Image: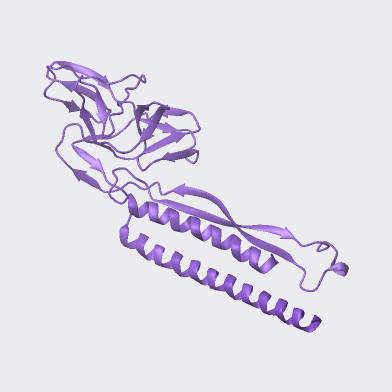
Length: 250
């Protein structure tokens, strides 16, 4: 494969990744607490053989710039707040994450739709228990019927205090891996948020802007098609050259 095709193919692979990320954003436009993802591209520079010596450069010799999928990051801005009046629907104003326990260990989330399980444990939509500030499950008694949650995460009922929701922040927010549309695994330690702002009876909606994502998807698709057409034209050019050389030798 020649240099032009290799460079175009690197762009094609990167553009395919960008389309996948945009499609994921659109698919999670209604997922509570979801944060829009973006892809960062950069140039991967490769010096052609002998390009370090100007006297030995082949015709057209230069540094080649391939497209590299460098990283994926999340838009940290909060989504709009939806008022539900459900006492176990929670959102966080500002920084911080809820922690739920999964079979793979604790995971962070901004999705605050919780409910009471049959044994009184406070769980999310997938049945994962919400953890308190000590990393323990939060559990309501059968007699706890009037639930109030303060801004600092303290849960109380008409029978007294029950526990405090653990609101944490990763030391390095860029070292977080998405696991589905709601959960995040942190590769860095987490610390409790000093003054969390928990809002009871509300949900943080996705911060995805569907109209913007559809426009971006159309742009990504046009660029993908343009690169595909270039690769096809380059392939046709090479095949034509091979045919002409073959004809001359025969």
